[in-house]
Length: 291
Image (cartoon, rainbow, N blue to C red):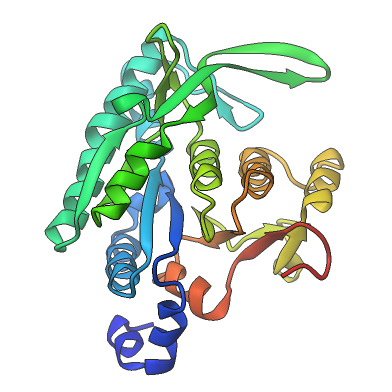
């Protein structure tokens, strides 16, 4: 898709303009950041969305870069239930990579495009308050270190930035009331933020087309999946690994007030605009027949 074609297509632009004044929360995945063409298309999409009056909040990940630096420093990259096991040393790397490297690079790229992007950490103004998260495997409670669970979002900060026409670019590092830093899965952070903002859309950019009932069979790609089906497919092992937290956060976002939740393939150029215009990806819905 050529961005110039989108600009010249009045029907497509009107499709976006119907969301004027609405808030979209976008989770920007780490694996997409290494794809230069997709990264440039992402910036173009954000520019066009904001020109149509859409309020945008970006929550980014950075998993591949964290893994790179953990390995460089002699650490071990270990995941349980799709979440990174994070000891004290790894937490220091997480914060440096996410809040320092990735956050500032992304906000800079957007700013160079002429957008009012401002990079912030979840620790700034207590934006993301968190507590220690545990995972349960085979009914066993497992400690995975400095991994956080969102307890509250400072909505006032976000609303103030959005009203001033800024694009908040958020690093998902939170803190508890004692000041301890926590690595928060970016999908969960985006879901919590979209919920408190009652966002029109939560768009989770990932590195596959959407949700499959069989990842080896392209014909099993789902255009939509219900909240109950997500639970069923996870229990049956049809959905596993890193897709589990993605879908759990999608369900949480809907339950907290997000109006529409979509998984979209961030590797494809202009996947954000394609979602608005053609509803691509997998939509998570409350029940069959729901809009």
